[in-house]
Image (cartoon, rainbow, N blue to C red; front, top):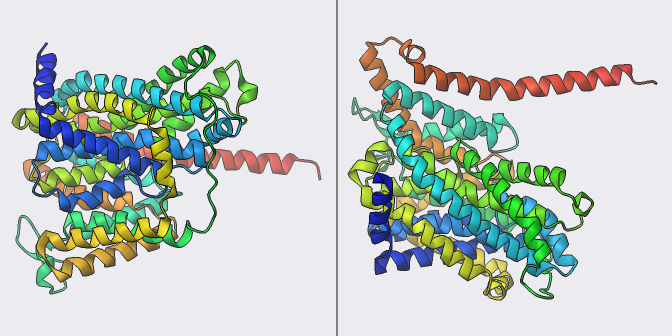
Amino acid sequence: METLNALLSGFAVALTLQNLLLGFVGVTLGTAVGVLPGVGPALTVALLLPATASFDPTGALIMFAGIYYGAMFGGSTTSILLNTPGESATIVTAMEGNMMAKRGRAGPALATSAIGSFVAGTIGTVLLTFVSPFAVDVALKFGPAEYFSVMVLAFVTVSAVLGSSPARGLAALFIGLTIGLIGLDSQTGQARFTLGVPELLDGLDIVVVAVGLFAVGETLYVATYLNRGVDTIEQMKGSIWMSKDDWKRSWKPWLRGTAFGFPFGCIPAGGAEIPTFLSYATEKKLSQHSAEFGKGAIEGVAGPEAANNASASGTLMPLLTLGLPTTATAAIILAAFQQYGLQPGPLLFDTQPELIWGLIASMYIGNVILLALNLPLVGVWVKLLSIPRPLLYAGILIFATMGAYGIRNSWFDLALLYGIGLLGFVMRRYDIPVAPVLVGLILGPLSEQQFRRALAISQGDLSIFVTQPISATVLAITALVVIVPQAWRLVRRMQADAIGHHSPI
């Protein structure tokens, strides 16, 4: 009952004219950037951080959340009609959705995607509403040792899951941790890694780093390497509405996709890629029309799209209750919280209930708006694909430059923006993920602070991290995350070698 009362008060916040308008702008922008290949919600939120510094925190965060889950809706349009995923989480949608479009069934593909996104997003938000208070109760039992262990888990899983190899992910993480150490030590006041530059005494501005990595770096990479082909857009043919058989084949995948997506969104570095592939494999195995997979099976669109959107709701669970980001966009939203002097976590539910519950309530409203925006207006979104890429990328760079300079009107910030942007470009060029850099930059100082507090409590005894039950359990899970995949690869390699030795010459 207490949760329902809090949610109702959240609706009172979300339904104010200002917040409703910002929520509408957020989901509309999210749909647009989801449609545009190579843009995405992480880049968009990073670009908007400087421009929203003077906004009311509640309204700004409602807009950012709308951009995040709105992009999950919009990404399917590009995947289905252009066979180019607007978001990495819609790669699976492109496999079956584009084949449906080639067969003249783009309408039902877009419809099952939009309706499945609405169903999964709503169910995910309901779960977020009622599970968050329990997660907060658990988080309130955390001490410094437990928080440090959870952050170590986040570091390891983000590094292991994102990117083509754990080594590349760890390299990116250590870059972020190193950058996070720049500035004055919070306890001793000693300057660290400042190289005698006065502008570095306050550390690197998170907003400038985020904009540099995701806006400048990503834009330079996309403009350099992904702007050479000629895109062919499939034409909309026939009715956009689903037939009775389409509904029958879609509703179970929607629910199964939601069951995959939400839990994976909650775990560190879960994201949306893994549950979408699991959903696709499950639907292919369970479908009575398995022969259609690879040729345009509607289940192959319905399930992964539901998993994609449910994971967006799940991502907000650890972000709001523990302050842990599990995706690149969540990391930038965490930077937005810090921009307003807020630190997500269990205490925020008590100190800023209007913000937290207003944000959750806005997701219910946003899902309804997205359904209305995506189905009837699909023709409008398709026209966005005709924007010349050079103009799009040039606009992003100009906006990024103006935003970074506007923070402190400093030339140093501009130099830092493009220095970080070139770093992001090189990392993308050599397939090193950029998200762990931001996670290391944001969580690194916090983990150092919790580590020092834990040692102060235990008087320097490191065993506190393994004698506390919750901390020990989390560290054990961290060890398994590292060991199990490597052991599995070793077993597979040994099996392959054994088969090679026994094969006839």
